[in-house]
Length: 213
Image (tube, rainbow, N blue to C red; front, top):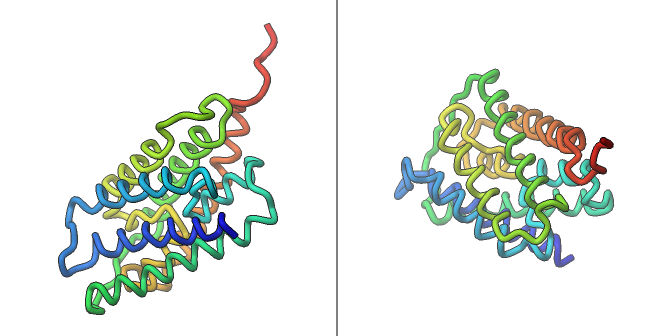
């Protein structure tokens, strides 16, 4: 239960920051990715020793496929993450005074590609800095994860909204930032990228035996 509580809280503050930073009035404008990457970094450091600090169903799937998350934990993690995102969406509405929001218009093919690429990057970073023997015990994992999301938000936020996370996509949809008819784009791209990142990690096999000769 402790793990799921941490996942709820971490995802809650991630989505709360996203909504507060990008939704008018008093939004952070072009600096929003700094706030988003910063809070993710902080939450990863805060909860990493308890739950692994996934805060993202795609990351949970990648870690499961990599073999570092039990199948029995998979539903609890995802439910906690989605619940945290939904709760944050409600609080953002209260903080912002329930403003009228126009959902982002996306080009589906470009959004699919953008979400896939940076979710793949995020999952690959997580697998290598937080689950690999070669980086075990490092002190930089939170920075690497937070900066990856920040870089993605700066790079393709205008293309897809920069979710890289099905729970974030859910929260953004509930806040009216994303059109509900487009949520499949994020689910498909994010989960496909998670599977691809896990396969790539196993292909590279950083924890496998050294080649002979």
